[in-house]
Amino acid sequence: MKKSILLVFAFVFITGNYFAQELALVVEDGKAGYINKSGEMVIPTKFENAGKFSEGYAAASENGKVWGLINTNGDWVIPPEYDKMKAFNSGFIVVLKDDQWKHVDATNKVLEIPATEKVFDFKDGVAFYRVEKKIGLIGTDGKVILEPTYDVIKAFRNGHAKVRNNDKWGMIDTSGKVIVNLNYEGVGDYSSVGIWAKKGETYGVISDNQFHENSEINKISDFHYGENLTYARKDKLWGFVNAKAEWVIQPEFAKVKAFRNGMAPALKGKLWGFINEKGEMVIPESYKDAEVFAENGLAPVKEKKLWGFIDESGTMKIEEGYEITAKGFSMFSKNNIKGFHNGLARVSAKKKWGYINADGELLDGKWYERAELFSK
Image (cartoon, rainbow, N blue to C red; front, side):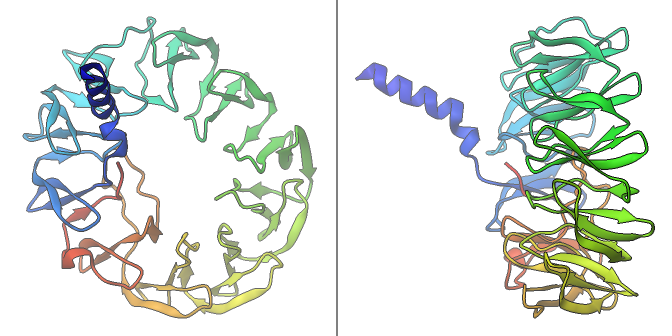
C-alpha cells in the first residue's frame, strides 16, 4: 500500500506541471506577474523581467540581472543564479553563467552534450549542434541523432525542419530522416496537406511525394490551419491553389489571407471582404483591414481606425474600439496571433492591454501596461 502511495505521489510530482493552468504574463507599474483565465493574479507582479510559461515553467528575474525558473505556483524551482535564460522546451532550458551556455532541466541538472560551437534551444525534442559550421541534431538524452550534415537547419515546426546544403533546400523530421530531398531552391513549412517549393524558377506544391508545378505562380504561401487551399500569386494578383498547385480560386484579388472555417479575407479594390472556397464574396467588401476567423467563429475587422469582431454572417458582434497587434513584448514570443485564441482575444485600448471574451467583456475589468498570450 505504501509503495502504491509513493508511486502516485511521484506521478503527480512529475506530471503536475503538464496539467498546469494557462497563465498570461501581465505588467503593472513596471513589474511583471501572471494571471489565470479568470483574471486572478496568481503570481504577483514582482518581476523586473520574465518570460511566458512553457511546459509549466517560466524564466523570471526579480532584479533584471540574475535569472531563475519558476513553476505555475510562482515557486523557484531553479533559484536566480544565471545571467541569461531562454525558453523552457522539451524538458530543458538554455542558461548562461560565467560566459558558459548549457542546458539544464527543471532540477538544475546539467545535460551533457557533444562539443558544439553553439548551444541551441530544444524544440520538438531535438536541439541543433554545430561542428565546423555543419549542423546536426541531438536528443534530450544528449546523444547524437544526426551527425553534423547540413549548412542550415531552420527551426522545427510540426516536427519537421527545412534544411540546406549547397544552396539546395529539403526537409527532415526529428529523427533526421529526409522527407523532402534537397532538390529545391526553396521550400515552405511542413503541412500534412502540402509543402510549397521552388524548383529552378518554377513554384509548386509537394504532396503525395510528388512536386506539382504551376508555371503561372510567382509567389506562394504555406498551408495554414490544416486547410486544403493556400494562396498564390500570378503576376500581381492573388488566388488560391490546392495541394496539386491547381488554381481553385483564380488570381483576381489585390491581397488575401489564409482560409479558416471555410472563409478567407480578400481585398478587391480598396476594401476587404471574405470569400468562400468557391471564390464568392460572402461577406461584402466593407473593411479597411481584416484578419482570419478564429476557432470560435469571430474575425477581427477594421472599418475606420480601430478593430471590432464579426461573426461568420458578417454581423458585428463586438464593436470597434481596439488595437490587436502587439509588437516587441516578450523576449520569447513573436506575438503574432491576432484576434481570439482559446476563448480570449488580447486587445489594446488607450495604450493599455487586456483580454476580452466572445461577448466583448473585459477579463476581470482590468487593463495592463503589457499583456502576453496565455500559455502553460
